[in-house]
Amino acid sequence: MSRPKISEENKRLVQVNIRLTSSENEKVTELATTAGLSPANWIRYKIFIGKNPPAKVSALDVSIYRELKKIGVNLNQATHKLNLGEFPKEYPVLQIELVSLLNTILKLLLDDRKHDQG
Image 1 (cartoon, rainbow, N blue to C red):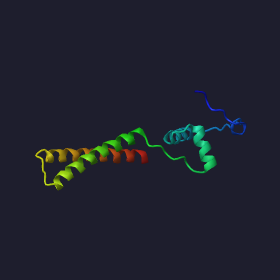
Image 2 (image 1 turned 45 degrees about the vertical axis):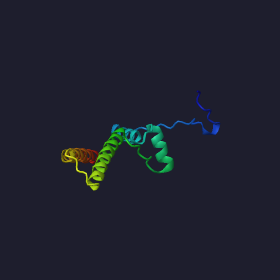
Image 3 (image 1 turned 90 degrees about the horizontal axis):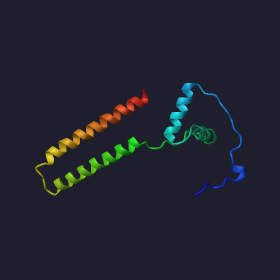
Image 4 (image 1 turned 180 degrees about the vertical axis):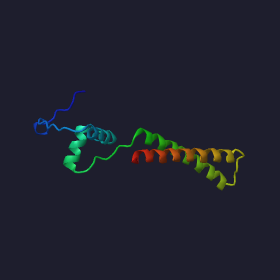
């Protein structure tokens, strides 16, 4: 499948060069990566829209979300059984494991947030 044709008025023919310091380049590259764009497209968006492009969700965030969702499903199932009056003998052990896992994930998320702010 070939690339779609671009009309003459939409072709980008004019090139503008700018010079950045190493730290400016790192910042633009990081912001562009977060938004899932090339640095040039990030700068173009910032200039013409006037806002930073929206950040994409990182793969790490998606995996954390999935893990938290699994924990929530397990907790809902256990709560449902408790509300029905069922109390399986392995429930206290599972509950302790889930609380421990949840605390570990929360600690990692909070530590990650501290690194992002610092």
